[in-house]
Length: 331
Ligand SMILES: [Zn+2]
Image 1 (cartoon, helix red, strand yellow):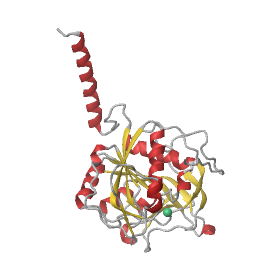
Image 2: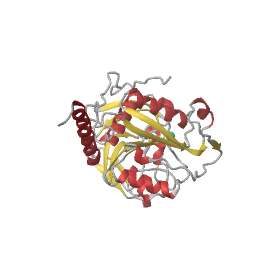
Image 3: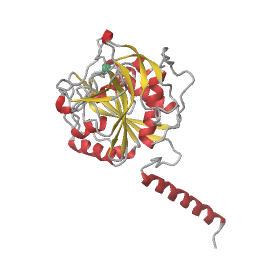
Image 4: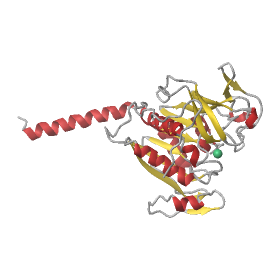
């Protein structure tokens, strides 16, 4: 006969068993029950010198929702961290060495499998990770982990095949027709996969530009206004890549008047990589670009989706309109 305590213990056991089942499904990978979604931001080498600040911004934005817990894994050798590293330290007790050129960190080996989603704030020129770390990352995403690529993270690792498959499209670092087609929307709303010869990656001067939602039925974009004005940013264009299992959520028109391509360029995409979900945003050049309420909303929703396959984060009241951007100053 079960004592009262025994019944309680049994109930707890059944409860944890059901979490285990949910965990194994690969769907709502809230393996941690109702606990926050576990996020790892990885960084250390990026041609955008504000990266230590934008890492802290993303961490704070995520934590402010109450839905995420966020750790940061940084390469021991950093590049272009400089002043921002001092102003926005990790305070993790580790020693970092900022160098004039990117240098591979042989000890960079985050335990990806401890997390639901990994966000890359690496950028152009990042030194290759150890082979074992590359393999662990591929395995993590392939087996159902989430991945979020922000702005110049799609410049990283041009020679790494699986990485290029995860991001769908990338730029610079020698990317060209061998990397895959240019992918964009034409004026009639048709997706073009252009195999013409040419380098991958470009942008005109920074400016405010409208973002047009192309797939309003995706959990990330559902309920988001069909068009919103983004704060000052780079408008990435002429990205190239394998673009396998890639869904374009939003585009921006790269106006020739702003030295743009004249095409509707992908700015937000999702990519299926094995069982893993990838959210790729080309936005986020500078700290003021991250302050855009539209950027933040879609970043949070994209991260939640990549981690769990669902989105519960609401579109806020102060979301930008079709013609007017809105920003929140980061304190
Ligand atoms: Zn940039």
